[in-house]
Amino acid sequence: MASGGTLLFIFTAICVTAVKSDEFVKIECKTTNVGDYGQQSLLECVIKTAELAQDATIRLVIWRKLTSPEDEDGLPLVVFAKDKLNKKSGYRFAEPLWDKKNMNVSLLITNTAVEDDGYYKCTVITDRGDSSMLNTLKVQARYSILTVYSIPEKIVPNKDSTLICESHGGYPRGTLRWFDEENHEWTGSSEMEATQSDDGLFQLTSRLSLLRGSTFPKYTCAVFNASGGKEDEFTFETNIPPPSLHGSEEDSNRVEIYKIVVPLVVIGSLMVGLLCVLLIYRWGSHCEYTLLVSYLMI
Image (cartoon, rainbow, N blue to C red; front, top):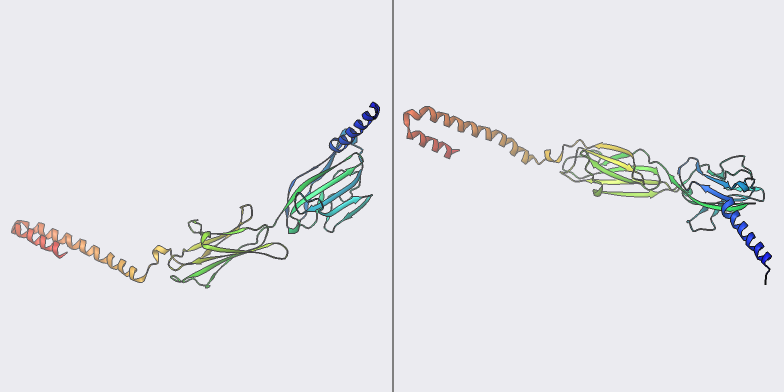
């Protein structure tokens, strides 16, 4: 049986070890970060020590790129071990003159690419304890200025045509939406295609079919990023009157005839009525007969 002194020593050693790991040293990171494509990105992490461990010396630092939060064997990007620093091209500590006494272990990505999007883990071991922290980087790239054109090049009334809207160089995948001049949305009548290039950026193409007899004077195409924010818009003018004003030629002729005939009928009725008033004193009931005949003729 172990003596009371031995048990006390073992208990004390276990407690000290636990304090070293959980209380003496703790790494604090900004867990969610946003990086712009083609620019520098910073994953901020700083080692915090208790008062009794302020003179802690770093023995090991490992920055890994993970495939998922549960990944334990991610790709090493920056490794400091046995007083030697190894780093993958494009990745380094944020402070160029970093050494094992520097508690700022932030990671700098010098040229952010789409492949940098994802999960990262920083692990630190010191002579006073160890700690690790998981964080993420969300890469974003702004979509290019929109290009909108029609097929055929000149839109003709009462003939089918297509509007095509394009934007490229964005990330993550965005959307193209269509609106008419009264801001009514027509995206449901369009078809959008998104293709990803070798660098991971997206090319967006949307086709809006314009049916004969239902084409509006203006259509606006807008590109929205993955967060729903509008990045650009372009208004295309078809130079065609609204659908209610460009009916068939036969309908137009009927409208013109109606505009001429109706006033003539009204004027004729007024003249007959006035004539009856003037002759009522001469012919009496004969005027009533004349008025009746006139209305029957109309």
